[in-house]
Amino acid sequence: MKAIVNVGLKKGVLDDQGKAINHALGTLGFKDLISDVRVGKQIIIELNSNDKEKAKEEVEKMCEKLLANTVIEDYSVEIVG
Amino acid sequence: MKAIVNVGLKKGVLDDQGKAINHALGTLGFKDLISDVRVGKQIIIELNSNDKEKAKEEVEKMCEKLLANTVIEDYSVEIVG
Image 1 (tube, each protein chain N blue to C red):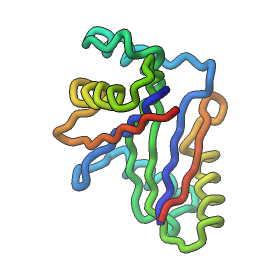
Image 2 (tube, rainbow over the protein chains, first blue to last red; image 1 turned 90 degrees about the horizontal axis):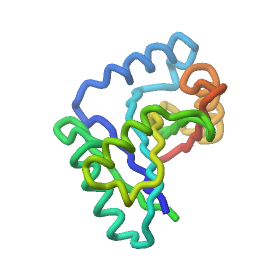
Image 3 (cartoon, each protein chain N blue to C red; image 1 turned 90 degrees about the vertical axis):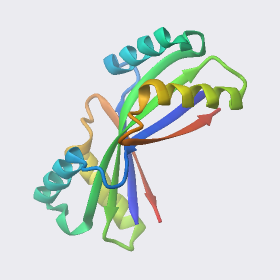
Image 4 (tube, each protein chain N blue to C red; image 1 turned 180 degrees about the horizontal axis):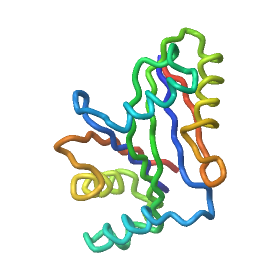
């Protein structure tokens, strides 16, 4: 069983990395196709557990304590397998 | 329409960030629950297109040219909406 955690900046928070990638893709000829780029982290955690609900609760605690800066970031947790 | 691009280190490539997070989570009391941690990027691209197939081809080109270092990273592209 594993957890897929996606952490991204909240709407309205300036995404420098996204802007830089947007600009770079523009110079590579993709300008017309792109209206916005946002960049986040994906953290994949292999879990020693068979209890999906309990595992999800624990991973959410991990997000609150370490994986996400909840002031400026949102996170989602998906338990797979 | 938007593209969700996930970029992660290939299996076998040492993931320093993942190791550091694994260690930190261990000190926060999650040691027994975790067997491995891998960290990657999630890039969300808002697209000006109605052609899902064409859009996916273009985003894969973006990955090959800029978003992923294909020597050490794998990527996946999902078109949503």
